[in-house]
Length: 378
Image (tube, rainbow, N blue to C red):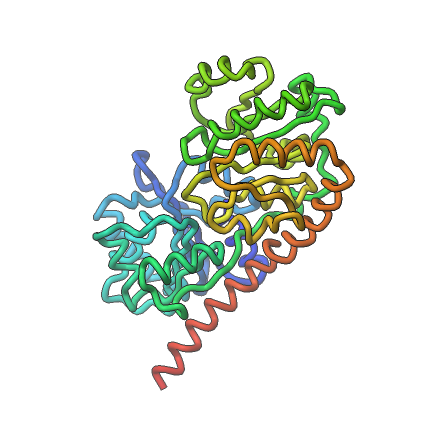
């Protein structure tokens, strides 16, 4: 979605944009080529639901292409295509896309070659991705938070001038205070008076669901009416024994994957990020703040750049379920404080993450690279 939001914003600013997705096992199906001119080529390492997602974001299927990023034959056809079209910018998202674009453009003159970095994880110890990050061919790395930029400089030895911070964006037409969560509450038979706390993310270890459930049990001791919404794909039965032990079986609702995230977040009284590692900047926090839902986050990666403790939300140590429970209860019991934090958070997230601002900054980076290269040739 971040790639699609960027593509849409750049198109609105007058650029021609082609989006490339990983075709996976379905084969390399291609839409018609764009008509005329050069432009910007974002490439993503994922392919699932690509056409449905782009349609929802306002992009025509004529502006998307599928290549299998794991096939040499597709790499060669990709190379021929970009030579023919003469793109000004290639912007890769995720490591598989970077590897594919890097190898496909060896020996070619690309005016601006950029990649996105959304996590503080270390780079691979060897291989094409590490080579690409350290190469002169890659002009710029766009980090989604200062914490990610710092990790690349300190841990990986990248030059500071090679890494720029541009926070991930959100769509203000979808995520805003006017969104109602009433329908979501009705769906799960929850009255407006029920304190509702949510966590959003795939049901994987690094998202901290186990810590969240430990905190939830403590919240129930202080607020027995509280209920908990767990949003994201995965297998809920892995938590069955934990929820039984904690007495939460009837208090936790697993929703699975949801496409109506503005309404889901608006239905919550508190949105929680319990992640333990691997984040860059958690998108759910950004979106929850935009709809006016108070937030609690662990002190992971770049989240404290968005959630400033006791200014735009509450921050707790990683793995500290008792501190998490206290922060949740504090917001549920003190609605005036919660409303004050959420109001400040809404303005803060607009300043940092509004998609139009993000697109303007990325456009500036593209232009800086191209102009610098042109001057070097004189």
